[in-house]
Length: 435
Image (cartoon, rainbow, N blue to C red):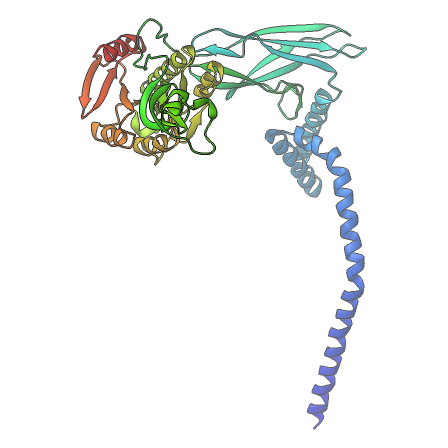
């Protein structure tokens, strides 16, 4: 009986305590929320001030700072004189490093590329112009200019007020690519590398390194040469190739009424035409890495593609360039070469047959289609890709194999030209035209 009353009393006390804790929690919750809000606002205000400081500390600097804190704690806790000496040295090194990165960057920097578009192997020159716009001298500093995946560092001497410093540099153009030059960064760092402060001073610039191309002027490129285009079997109400006469239908253009026949028959008759097709080149460049034995094959293929496309543009004929992941701009010489400078061979599930299927449905006005591939594309795949195109389209394949002798083979109705170098392209196209 007594134990039962005691248990009930303890349970009542416990319930009251839990209720008290819940009430206290509910009462304290608004205060905690206000504290969190205040802490968040303090963090937002302090972040712009603190982040430049933390960003200036290098990984080596963080390690030295951690070592300094540890040696101070252990040295004071155990009265260890040697550790205290190390702590003092580390602290002095950190404080001295601060002096190297303090100060404002009052530079006016200009990054100028003499040419933004060059060909592989050409000399690309850039100019870095640094000017002190402050009213007092500026201490020496370092200007870093990222070039592609690397970076070039240029030490800038002490500049008097209004003084300028100029640096000329060259950009390597050994490979076709788009090289990002800049942004220029002003760098201040201590000799030990504990602190490093960077300030971005310019925007990045792009340098296009175009592929080497071969002029095909004076040699037939296999294009159709008739000025009026090639007549097709498609019937049109407006063209230049007359086909027949038919009865007038409301909505027909009255300019096409044949009045002599109308007067003879007593019934309105209109002219009917056959559509003509302008010479249009479609180049299908494989960018599938598995289609090439190496980078040299792919670079030769890109150069062949560029040579064909530029010749079509030079002759004012339509050109469409398709790659495995889309279409390149073929409406202008510069835009085509810019796009070719970005092209890379990457592993892909999209094969030449898939690209040919896209070409057959999207480039319906093409009169000539050229496959530009590497040694990894076999005759069977070339034949299958050719079968995806309309029968009235002339199809040829240019297989790029550096060092191989030039040859001409036939796979079904497809002509396959093997090129060992870019210089063989004009002769190969002339032989193709004469065949």
